[in-house]
Structure formats: structure tokens, C-alpha cells
Length: 469
Image (cartoon, rainbow, N blue to C red; front, side):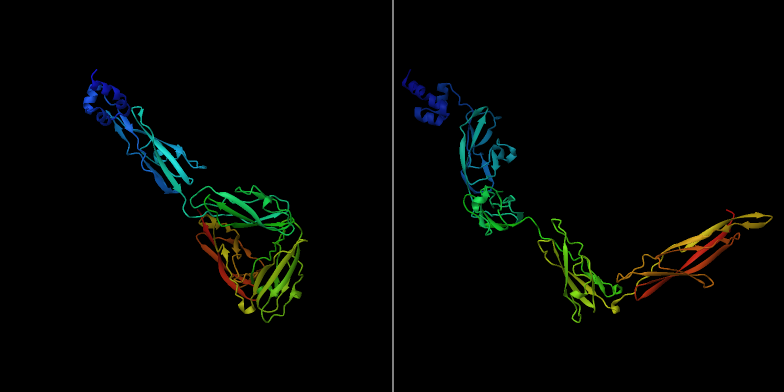
């Protein structure tokens, strides 16, 4: 073997390993083509993986991965394609990111892919490229994820009402971090009643999102919550626990405010029946007058009974009266509830409106027969006119009195008082063949409140026709 052959033989393993005819030729002093010919070798098709540049991004920003710089080397057929495979080699502690987080086309086998980091720290990924089952060494890329300057926000949850020795669940689940970083929780008792022996050690699992505490006596407890995103602590947020001995105060309900109709006389009717005790205890009532018109001399003495659930009150002049109700369950008085009534004078009374609906016309026929050119007809039967005055109304909502009058052709009057409805029975009458016989009655409805009345007049018509149909 010549010296030249010896050099080629010595360096041939390097040529086959790295697949670089440039390096090989530089070492052996021959061209790539000559070396291949001499060694009777052809460089196989392979790839070079390039994962792209390292990146630095803020938390919750999308990371774009790009392996488009990868290439094929060697003698590759025109139909050859690079197969890509991304993987995570390292992620920060507490991160749940993995290959399933690569969302581009929902696959890690794409030249470009993306993912959303969920924790601050370094994410190391690598891409492997293959062609015809020949794979190159994976190329790594480092994604450094940092947090912005925004601190997390603590939310200690709603205030709570509880009883002594009752386990109370605290709730910090509405706390959050602007970058959506996982939070660390720290709860503390900052205020307790003088009768309590509790301190922060009395909070069970104070580093969890929903710890518990058992108040040991009656009073107000204040808890504080701060949260951390591992870089910054939030400002504290507070919640109170109101603890009683187990009995809740009753609730007074003095009814709805309103206006007193003119026809109600000099009495205001009050009702406290909407009052209740959450524990179901029987109630005691206490009414009082808290304001009256300027010229009024009314006082608590004008109640029928200040301790009744629904007393009446005698007013003396027009204007606005306000009343207060408190109820007592044997242990606690309720907060007061106030109701106000506006009393109108006689000059504010409005007239009622009379309205009549119902049957105003009834048409009847009677059968007629003929014999020797003489017609004989049946009678038209009696008929009932049903009239309705119940839609009459009073603007002041005063109670109404009803009074009906029916006038026949002779102006005689039938009176039917105190009813919103009228049934007037018209008598039967003889029919004549081919003749339309009619009779009319005038009806008047009078409605009145305590002072003013109004009327409505209508006519009732009954027709009777003889026919042989």
C-alpha cells in the first residue's frame, strides 16, 4: 500500500463518522470526489437539527419555537422529508408543561410549535430531526421565563357569621396573580375578642387556600390573608367572623308605605305581620310615632295598642306620618323598620268612575203558522239582561257603593242597591207575523265613595219577531 493509500485508510473512519468531505479532504489532501471514488463510498442522507435561538420572555407570553434552520445533508432523494420531534428536557418546579402543551397543530412533531409557560424559570427543549429513520443529535434551546413587576392580589373572601365552637371555613380562592402564577397562601388572626384564647396557631392549615378556624367565644374575629408568587407578597386582605351565642336577632317589618284614602276616616291601619325571628322565637312588638305634620298633636297615645302586631293609629291633620316598629325575641331587639303614610284631605278626593258591561241588546224570534190566511204566533220568552258594574273604579282606591235603577217606558223605577252586578228579567211578549216588536229600558248605575258619586246610563233593548222559518 502506498503512503497515500495509508493516509486515506487512516482517516476514513473520520470521513464516515462526520460525513464532511471538506474536513476529510483537508486532512488527506485530495478532493471530495476523488476521496469518494478512492474509498468507493457515498455519504448517506442525514439531517442537521437546529432548535433556534435561546429566548427570554415574560410569564404568560406565548413562546414560538422554530426549527426551520434544520437541514438535510448527504445524498438525499428528492422525495425525502425531515421529521421533527420536540421534547421538554427540563421545566421549573411546579410547572405542569409537557409535550402535550405544544399547541401548534396539537402536536410536538412540527417544524414550528408554541407553548405557554406556567411558571417562572428556565425551560429547556430540544428538537430531533430524522430522515429515512436516520436521526441527528437533538439540538437544545433554552427559554428563560421571568415575571413582570405586578404583585399578586389577596382576597380573604366574604365576611362570615357563625356561632361559638362552630368550625368556620375561610376562602382565599379568589386571590390571583396577574401572570397566573401559582400562589402561596399565608393566613393570620389579627384581632380576636377579649374572651378568646386564639392566635394564628388556631388557624388549621394556614398556608392553604381554604383553612378553617373554630372561634372559642362570642365576638368579632378578624383574619388577614397575604399571597405570594414566589417573587413578591401581596398587600393583606381582611375578613371578619361575627360570632354570637347561637341566637340571631329578629327582623322587624312595618309593612309598605303608602297613601291613606280619603274615605278611610281618621284612622291609619298598620301591620307588622311580616316581622320574623330566624330562630322561630315568638315576638313582642313595639310601635312608636317618629314624625307627624307640623300642626299635628298626635302622639303614641293615639295608637290603639303600641304592642299589637297590627294596631290602628288615629291621625288629626292632613300630611305625612312616619312610624317605627321594633320587635323583641326575648334576647335581642331588632333594628327598627320605618313606614310612612300620606294622609289626604277631603279636597283631594277624586270622583269614582261608573262602568257598565254586559248584554245591552237581545233579539228573539217566535214561530208563526197560518190557517185560512190567518197567522198564529208563539210568544217570545222572557229574557235576562246580565250587567256588570264591577270594573267601576276609584282613583283614590276608596271602597265603592253600587246602586242600580231600571226605568221602563212609563218611567217606573226598579231599584237594586249594594251590588256590582244586575240581572234584569224582561217579560215575555206576544209576537206578530212579520212584525219586529221592540221594547227598551233605561238603566242607570250610580257608584259612590264616602263623599262623591258618579253615574253611567245605558239602554236595554229586547226585540221580538214573528217568523215561519
